Length: 235
Image (tube, rainbow, N blue to C red; front, top):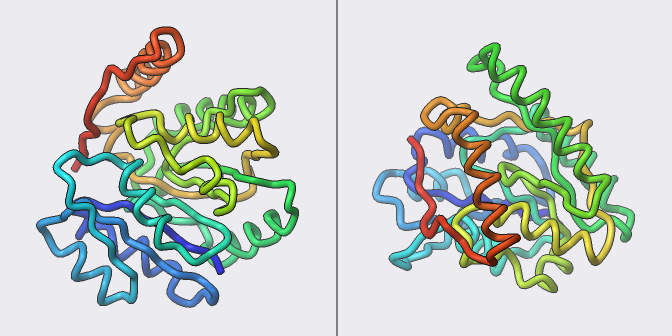
């Protein structure tokens, strides 16, 4: 079995799309790790057959919610997806993932990210082309820059790593891959495409988000300090 784990917070506009893409695929379970949504996210998820678990803590971040979902996962392979993402072809992607993880040497991996075709602009094309090249290249080093929109991790190693660092509001996605890469093989899957919403890029801007990643990583590496304490949702 494969477990799809989706952290949510007020995602009623997107949750149906992300869950429905897996509706005709066997040997899957859909787990919603919700940060106490006050819209219809939970209602919609349950109606579509997903298992819902609530994080009722006052402080919220994606790492905590992903860890919550993983605690209840029955699958040997964990696929962490954001609530505004979708595989280009979910059925083929799952079969591809099953094939790749048939080798016990592979511990984790990330797919190639693109903006939803109907929402893509010229700046998205250029950014994601550069972004994909950087990510792909980083996986040939000891510091894989794994983005968190979609991550695939073998459950055994996930539990060995004790999950995501729940104290980190950002960059917890890359940090767990750094730790996993020290234990074995991690890969960038150029042949698996996941579409994501451009909402964060539209509101924050590519330059701002890029600088933010650099600064937070610098402080974490040099000063062992997290400068962003709380994750902020973008509508």
